[in-house]
Length: 100
Image (cartoon, rainbow, N blue to C red; front, side, top):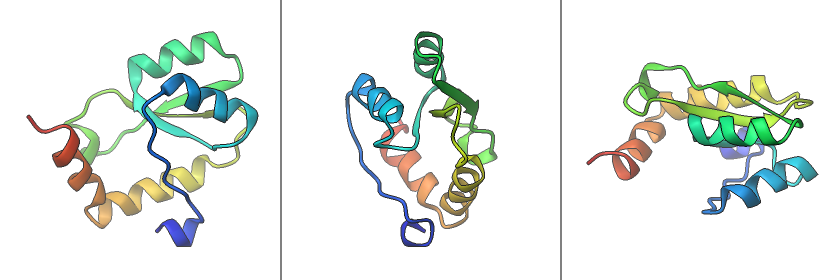
């Protein structure tokens, strides 16, 4: 999927840094918890967000994708998420990071 959509996965711990990277165009989007995204979208008018709605994300409520308002990548992001769901990657990530 990464090759097909020409995506680079770049895990980082500093959301503030990731937001700045979006604003300057170095990264295209981030997937974060909804309350965190709302805070940054309220602070930076360049950003927008949408709720990640899919049964695979139901166990992690409020997960959203944050990207620039001018982004043309929403369809590509949606397709990439569907592939992550279909091939089990999203479930594996949920199990690794969110199961208690």
